[in-house]
Each structure stands twice: as C-alpha cells, then as structure tokens.
Length: 216
Image (cartoon, rainbow, N blue to C red):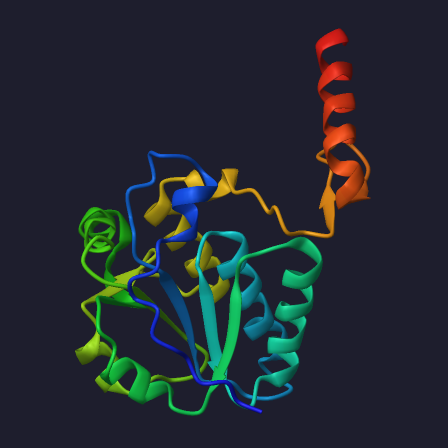
C-alpha cells in the first residue's frame, strides 16, 4: 500500500549528528525516483534507494508500483541501520509541484555539477532539498519546476552513478564517515575477504582490529 510522504522540512539533517559539528546543513535531503517500469526497472530503482541511504540522504520516495524495491531497501535499512525512510507515492508530479524547498533534477542535459554544487549546498540552510532521479522520460515540467537541472557530465550514464556522484559532491565526502548506531550487524573492513559481525560484537571486534593494525 502506498505510503504518502509527510512534511519534515524542519528536521535536523541526520549527517549533522553522524559526522560531527562541521556539518552545517539542517534540512533533510530527499531523493524522488520519478517513474518505474515493473520488471524492467526493479534493480535500478532498488539501487537508487540503496545509494540514497548509503550516501547521506534522509529518505527516498519511489512510485507506488515499485513495492519490491521499497521492501528491499527497507530490509537493508532494518539490518544495516538507519535512520532512513522509504516511502511510496502515486503523486510524484504533485510532490514536485508542491515541494517547499529547492529542487535538483539530475539530467545529462543540465548544468555541470561542479558549477552548481556550492549554491545547492548553501540552499540546504533554507529548506529541504528534493533530488529528482528519472526512471523514464520525465515530463518537461520537471525541468521547469527544478531550481537546478544538474548534469554529472553531459554524457549518457547510469542514473545511480549520477546520484552517487551528486551526493558525494553535495556532502563533500562527509557522508563516507557516517555511523549506523541502530544496525543489527556491521561490516568489518578488510584488505581481503569478507567479515560481518552482529552489533553486540562490533565494538570489541573494532578494538581487536585496531590493536592488530597498531602492532603490524
């Protein structure tokens, strides 16, 4: 069942508490996946949501016919931590029309991200930021409603790659230092191999890893 978005424009951006006092922006960042073709776009829409979560956005809104993608992102958030919200809506154009804050539309036809990122970053102090990621041909009204039409290069590329680069430029890499305090499992970074531990073992495992590195 679709879950309609709620107004949370005055909430403190979660990166403020996640990465330290140097994060000055106090408005949330919301990714809107515009359009979804079931079967064809399932993997891409899922990856839009996972990228939004991992790289600093507060929530993602996907179409009401993208239930499988929404459930996958919700499951990852439950296991690997938040806070992060996944919502569904069949009123995507209405969300754009009535958004009370700046809007970024990611498109290969837009202005270069390196020329617009500073102004967009500054706008985070004035209202919640909506980042529109197209999943099909978007109506021209999206271009008109956007505060910025932004291109991550002006070459054809994946919308997931564009979102990832945009968020990293927006947060200047600070999103890479996020912590996930409510996760029920954590990945232990390793030079080779894979290691995932339950949350109650994470602190002791991290101390053990640090001690090993110091004595290496």
